[in-house]
Length: 271
Image (cartoon, rainbow, N blue to C red):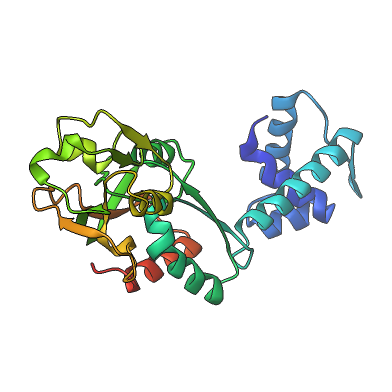
């Protein structure tokens, strides 16, 4: 089908008049007739029965007219500015529990849109946004490519936590409680512990440290004031490892519901 001539057909089918269609499209009547003929030739089907007094649609013409009307209605639903949209967010577990939840709450009180949140590792979040599975992610990695751009939000202060005092020179001699293979303990210490507990929950990691199962490295902001734990600030952590970024797809025109959420993030971040 040569879609260039579909508008001439739809206008004529709606008005049932070549002259009225020509007036509506601001072109000559002969041009309208010519475009419809070219459309018919492209699909090998006659769409309109022509006469001097009346315009009649063929069976195929009626089917095409209805199909295009349904398509136009679907497009209106998709691009309707007042429609409820969905924001697909990917984030680290600790950020969701201690920071992002408040932002989502503030956003939901102001706007009607839906929010879908997925917890993942930095690698899972990066892969997800590069594949278009997320609209926005919050990650410790500064992602900059043709598809994605990142904005630094704030720095996290990393602390090593333990139930009892530990010697930093003997970190590998203690049990480790980690989130995954990209945990800060693995990043900052080349020599691994012989006993490692991998738990995909920040709150559970803190609970296990409280039970003296092992030591862990976590962002300080996720700890509560009543957590009775020993803390050692990680002086040797790089700024890249302890920074949080908001990464978004590179829209030329940012959708309104994304812009609203991003503005809410900026209001509550130390940029």
